[in-house]
Image (cartoon, rainbow, N blue to C red; front, top):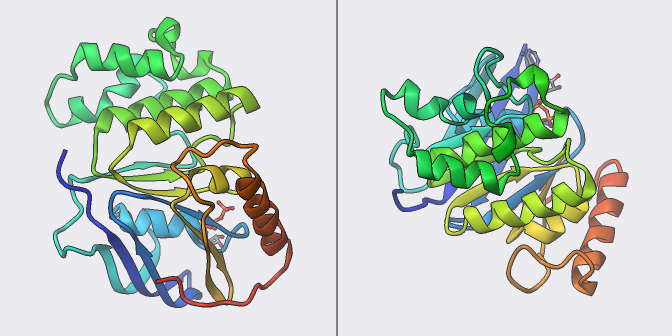
Length: 248
Ligand SMILES: Nc1ncnc2c1ncn2[C@@H]1O[C@H](COP(=O)(O)OP(=O)(O)OP(=O)(O)O)[C@@H](O)[C@H]1O
């Protein structure tokens, strides 16, 4: 894996003739977890797609990419909100798709390890249609972990999981992605408070930066400072428009 770079997105974006954000300035520190929250439709997934080089219908003006100026291509993995599993491939085939698309053979020992980590070792030969929503999401997570990239963009990666699996997958992912630059989009204040070295709320008025609780991630869910931040985040998200200031 190459060294994990810091990321930056500075500029404005428009989609279908509508301004999505203006004068946005987001810095994502190198080798850390940044959690991004905000109301539905504000542009969080769009930011991830821009960083992944998938602009789609978005017109973006500004700087978007690694702060070291080197293209992110080949250094970034995106786990999209939609699991994007190929229906004709089984779990193992989907998890190793990236390697095969690059004309390589995935390391079978690593595949076994990752599938065991996400709890899908016994379901490796199942097709997506034979999986539950949570199992599909874990298959998509396995594919992302198999990519072994320095920059990992996660769009609500644990949203379909039951509480127990969610806690386990948060811990596994935090452990597996140590030292990488991770940008995690989530609607869950508890998740952000557990996992974020940096926590940013995106609103119509801009970015709102919150000080993370002390301690290494993943923080214990019942930790007093983590619970306090969770409550603060919930309050901010319930308010329509928190005081905005550029996160930088
Ligand atoms: N292909 C498209 N054409 C037109 N508008 C789009 C398209 N894709 C997304 N949008 C609009 O862009 C805006 C931002 O979408 P985006 O998916 O980035 O929001 P989000 O903050 O990630 O929302 P959520 O939390 O619901 O996933 C939304 O208003 C959405 O309707």
